[in-house]
Length: 457
Image (cartoon, rainbow, N blue to C red; front, side):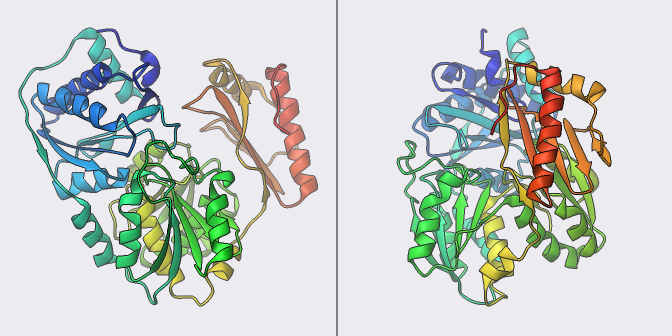
């Protein structure tokens, strides 16, 4: 059949509903995934969806496709993405699909896929496309059963996480699917919860459900200033990422969150490896070593980090976008809700959570900056820069994912996004002057290879 190649992304399948991502496409992906599953001896999939309006019909089409390849489906309804991951353990399927557009605009939706314990990404996703186009698909008859995993998920977390004292928490779900469970989770942990935008609404009427962007934390910061909550937690549209804000309105970005988790996890895993992506602060290296851990820099991409974590046996990993993976006392998948619970467990032991969070090492840094390119051009520019670019004064250059150039007083990063046709840049330094110098070095290098680049201010 004819299917839009553009929906087959690096880490998932994603597109505009009824334009690029159709019910027919979801059905075909389900059948191809079911065909792959037959070869791995898998017989059953968990399927969940977020609160988008297109979720019910795309989920039904996907399930129909899985059934037509002989797979049984456990439909767990509207959930956060980590609840699908949890359900693959709870029901011992090892395989599941979350129908979610994550933090994309309302007209988008997508599929995050797990098969036999592994997250599908990269070549595995392209293989599904080839199977659909070649018609290499098995036939069978499976059935759908409905199940509720919320109680098991809540019980598993509350049985594991214990707060030293009750805390007052503001929770902003941005009308994403975590709203159906987050307030209840934190109440059961003994917290007083101030709930913001926890009604699931696929139109996202209040703000975009993406805590990585400061403008989406404005309401949470205002609630903390006005009310008596001690800390603010924000979740993305499908609950696999966490945003954290202090009482004073300081955003604690995920690389600093990872410091707090590392200090805790490494007490139980001395000498353990902690993996973080190339966008993360260089302060993590010294912090992890000081807490008796081994820091490992790795490629950006939640699927790539998850795979690296599985390969190395690391108890903890995280990336700047907000995906944090805890294998200590948990399963190792990215779960914003569980990370929020673990964060509160740590902070409940201190009198002043704001002071604890704001005293974590920090540097002068830029947010993620984007330079637009033509489709595919971002990768070719990076390949040429990796071969030829010069950075005088650099201590070393890490080329596993773009170029991360380390200096004595900071670092600069340029890499190709795997999800959109942009170059991603980020800079960090000890002083404003050092930051400006490193940015100028990168501007000069980039303009040599892409003279028409429009550099962000």
